[in-house]
Length: 274
Image (tube, rainbow, N blue to C red; front, side, top):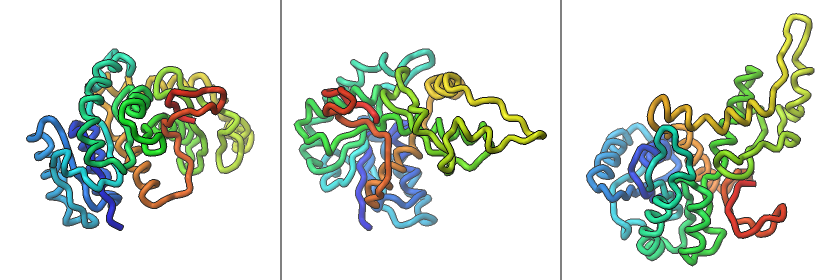
């Protein structure tokens, strides 16, 4: 199926998303746009030269005019977190960057679904909704889908089980106020807090899973990775590619993306993941 994705921002996150979409065969056309046109050209060419071993895809660097007829626009442009920074520290700078691209991209791709990845993702998603004039159902952020992946990976690692058997979610902000609704978490239909008793025997004692420790691990993961390697981009790229795959194939699935709250849980006029 023909599916066009435009990615704004050819930095580490944007280019890794383009690479992941290519390798997984999710998009048939990928446009990369960046203020640094040479960077976009280089990233697109590097990926393009490996496409003979992938499903057919046309990937190239372009301008906002090339975004016409895009099915999805992914926005990654913005200043990246540095060691010691929180996502909220980036707010004003990245809001200003986001506002600068709105006129051109919405003029050329008014019917696309917009997926925000730049941080702070919940604030940027909301500001884009307020500023662009597009309907709320065309706009969402990656939200806590990465946090959810980190949660599932951590639980699977703890119990030495396949990650696909873990069903758990992170809600709220993609940041330090996120939380896990533990009553919804299960492993192959067994509540997480009961799973320990199902696998223990005299020779195998399993320490209890401490909720607070797991939630702290999730909240601090991004910062720890940035301290070690300067940036995070692989896991978020896989997560965003999964979002796009679900949209393109119209999968009936649950994703903890950031979207406009309209009174759910008594919350409105803000974007969060629920």
